[in-house]
Length: 302
Image 1 (spheres, rainbow, N blue to C red):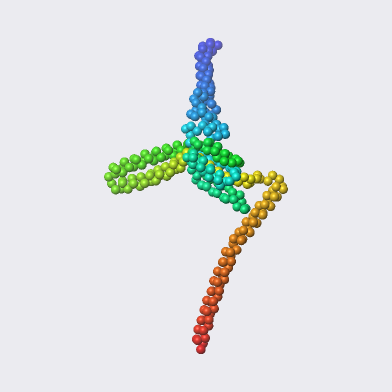
Image 2 (image 1 turned 180 degrees about the vertical axis):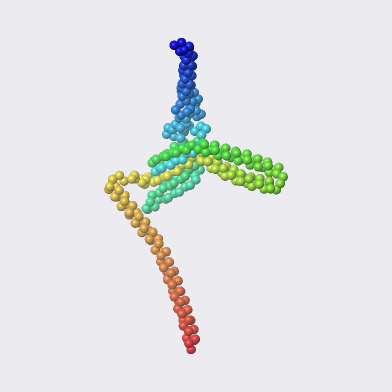
């Protein structure tokens, strides 16, 4: 008992110290867990760009509702309308685009005939800051069938190209400086080879950057214009509608085959006449050759 009483204070002190150490570790680990969220980001620190991320990607119907500040966006789209005169409407659409400082990259027009209605198709390049106003004018040219727009964020790609161009330009400048101080022919040839490679890569990257900048600055809109009442109906939704659609497709296919045969008949006749002429010439040449051979054999036998 005396031995236990002599050791009790020391034992108690050791137990208390151990408990304090364990409590300190528990509090430290609990504080570390509470200072980060589920993704490992400290709760007291705001992730760059997290505060305005919802504002950057909020869309409400038109392209101007998207916050494109400090971002590079490529916008493409399709517009389909019907109009009384698609050819005249196509010219008006081209005028509207040019008035907005845009351009027409392609333009296809199909005049009306006895078998088909008129139509037109244009690929328009419209300045991005004029897109909404210009689209409004284009939609006013006729009855709108549909409008489809797609915006692609290419900020990272654009920044990557800029960084690579800057690095290559620095390398080219350094090689030019080394070339001016080269003292041997071997060094000069090596520097010129490296410089040629760097300059080719630099020009390729600049071309890519110019193309991307053009896509960013000018939205690409495909405009389809149809004559009133000629827009294709929707897909058949029952058996009889499918049967009628299939029958019409069969008649159209047979009509196309008949037309193709009519186009091919003159060529077939011309080829047949030409082949017959060649055959007659070959047969005539063969007969003459046989005649000469026979006459020669008669002379030998005599």
